[in-house]
Image (tube, rainbow, N blue to C red; front, side, top):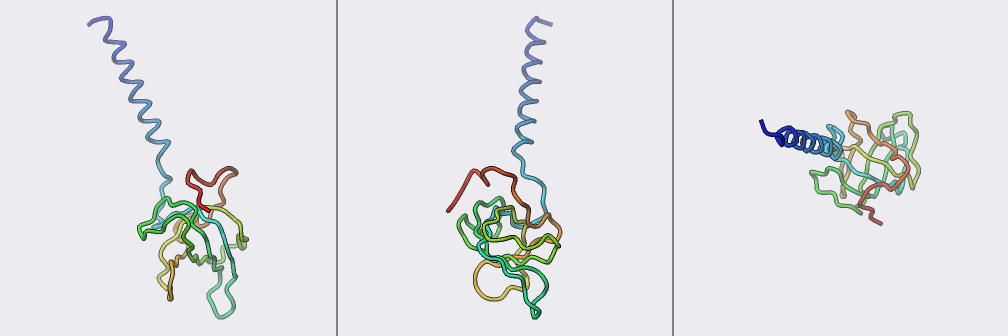
Length: 135
């Protein structure tokens, strides 16, 4: 065994540790939601007595984390949310929306419903919403 073998093993172990740490730091949080966007509420309307309980939002997609349907930043989408007791998010609210395509939607435009198996609409912590900001 030469003198450089322990140094070589230490360097390889450090490189593996750095790769493992940075690989986990960049990973997205696990979610079963089909679509994940950072959004800004443009309009919010509580559904009337003739409609299911909940809130109907018009939201601008600020950035896209996951979108199999091809939603692009800057696109305006409609999101239906069941009444969760959190109240109505006012216009200007910015957060993350975990949504699925609305199976009961009719009409034109991108229509989604908050994924009941996810966190739903989550307020972002203070700071810039994402690395990609679109107006």
